[in-house]
Image (cartoon, rainbow, N blue to C red; front, side, top):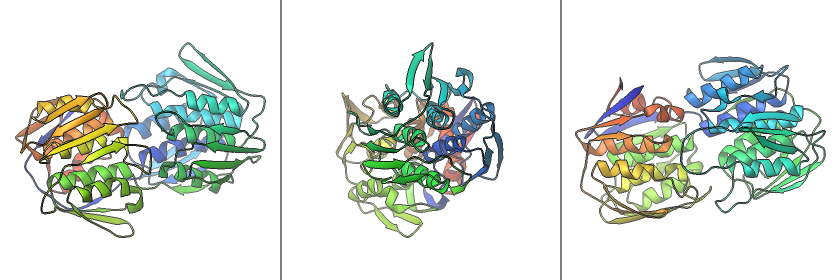
Length: 419
């Protein structure tokens, strides 16, 4: 098992290329199950989660070829049961339920695993399938959905913690082959949902309203093969913006979509940083004085929960008192204990972190608990005195393509070693 050593105190400068979006690529790859014809997906990031998804598709009978960020998939004759052995490592594997149900009217998937950031149920997914006419059975750790036929319906995906991105995509993929019209109320507005809808439309689906709270889908008889390029990863881009804010002397992000990052760039500007944007690039320069922030995580287009941990790392050395409240996953603060090991002054009050900025952090051995916490600890190590040793970094390989190499190219000093 690898660990990462971050030798702090190095300044970052230069340009970094942002990879394709993991959270977009996963459901798009799953959506290739909806057609027997070949599909080509480009700008697919090289991540462990992507590897797991391609393994799942192969186990289901798909022909999968992968080279240089491009994946070709042909889902000819496929199975409808994905056992625990191949889905246990990734929560997003649940997104194969929708396309299997849509195409075969039958799907069995073991309840998935993934990172531990609190309760993340799939009840909204199942509610949507039932509204389309499917019977749902949960037994022995498996979810089975089946239907004689699927019929369009009006479906609400609202919940107390906001919209569900995977749930919206899952229901949308099932509905594209249903009879009649389906309307999803309380749909997730994230760019990843829009990207999935674009791919489905290129396959022949009829979808309107993606990117709004209401999505309308008119079912079609069948879908055909298509080619698609995955959008840039806005969370990877946001993470590098925060890295530039923490330890940068002018860092440019290329191959990004600036409008997808407004919820991150706006508070960084409020904190005193200078950010300039062009059509597909962003540059962050240090400001004259860093200021504390009050942040609340909410679904898109608000500040993303997937950037909360990274922002805590920045605010840990920002003079004054910052307040960060987590409204999406209230238990998503496992990184706080590790930041405190490095000298951060953070007090947790239920789902709120009160951060009193300190002048410096100190390197220490720390443990990564989930994907975004891993990134936050790397960012904290950039500004710490001495060396920060981050263990269990397999989490970071789930969602960041070569983050250590990319940071080193900007001037950081990071080693990946065997634990």
